[in-house]
Image (cartoon, rainbow, N blue to C red):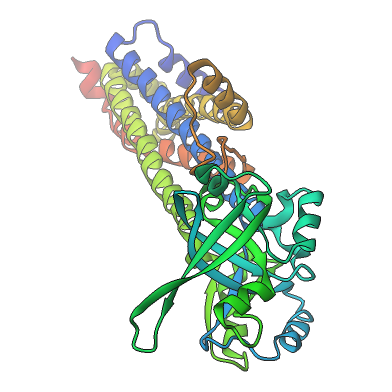
Length: 411
């Protein structure tokens, strides 16, 4: 086996080798390295987005919701909350009433979605984690108080202590539009969630929201946080089907699920595309070895006359191609790992140098480029690259084994 390796290495690094063959060999190595590098890097970025989605966005938005079909709301909701809190899959349950309308400050108006919350149940609401304790206390003490998203406050030019007018649409019995119901509120807090949510979210007190909207039972619905956010569709439907009232069901995969689905789609597309890139690079190995076999027919013939078996000839040329694949794979894996582990810092450095921001916090739920390296993906990438390389060496190696010494040496 040592002799076979020495022959493979000598054939690969022969000074007499055609320059064009050397170029094709180098390009195949570079192509495999580039494919492995980009594949690991982009998969790490997708993993980073998935991690941030779970740790950031899913830590603040409700995982599931039940919304009463009746305009009167959910009767005996306290009893239902107590029963649901005993479910081990549920982290917290929060009653709410949602008011959607227009918020007015002076001549400026903006669409807003105000969620009426009960301060007793809202302690586990992740969206309120950014609210300072003094603002939360001011909200608790003022039943006419409201906390608005930072984006909405900025667009309307609102500061803490300002009074704003809430306009709520109303429909008559014949579905004609009536004059909107108005409500004056005092801004006592600012909510900083990140991304588009900051532009249209706000909080008011549950009794005031229910009274304004005519919800006689006190709450329109219940919001849930689960220990496993990715089980939200199944758990929400299970709870909804067994709920004693007619309710609409919703979960985060319907409201924010496009983010997760986009991540998974991009991951699949990236995997397929870059595996094809590696495959194309491996085809260069086929070209390299075929030309090497044609160039070194006399050497192959002499080896055969000295007693070298066909299987040994096959191994020599498979090993020659495998060396190219191994070098490219190792370079790609090492560079991909190093870049994936330091991507956020590198991206921030580029942003400082160019003044260009890759992700805007006003649009996305994060304002930096995330990365999370998963070692099993590194192993799979390396395995696929080596496997494709081995497949690419089969045809040229078998062609080398078919060289007829009598025909070659006879000329």
